[in-house]
Length: 137
Image 1 (spheres, rainbow, N blue to C red):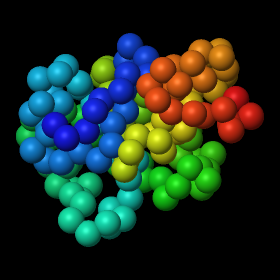
Image 2: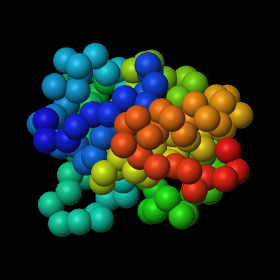
Image 3: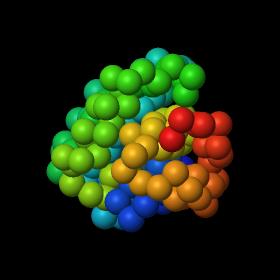
Image 4: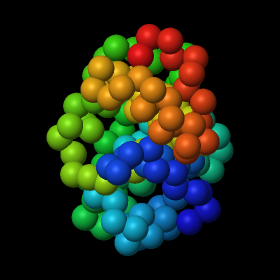
C-alpha cells in the first residue's frame, strides 16, 4: 500500500488516498469498515468512490462515502453522519481522503463531547495532524 495508515484510536485510523489494489491489504490489516471522505474527481486518475466501494464489498468490508470538499466546509450534517457511522460500524475503521487531514478533522469534530478535548488533540498530533485550530471541541 502506498499510503501510511495512522492510528487515531484503537478503532479508527486514517490514510491518504487508497486504491482498489490496496483493499486486500486493508482487509488483511484487520479493518472492517472504510470511510471515504474524498470527493470524486478532485484529481485526474483518482479512483472513484464506486470503484473503491465495489472492491471493499467484494472483500467483505463495509464502505461509506462521506465526501468533504475541505476542512473549512464541514457542516453539522456531515459531522453527524460521520458520528453515526462511527457508532454503528464494525471496527476498526479506516478513513481516507487525499492526505488524511480532512478525515482527521472530521473524526475530531464527530468525537467532540464524546472524548476529552485534550485526548482528541493528542491522538491527532500523535498521528501527525494538527487539529488545534478546532477551538469549539
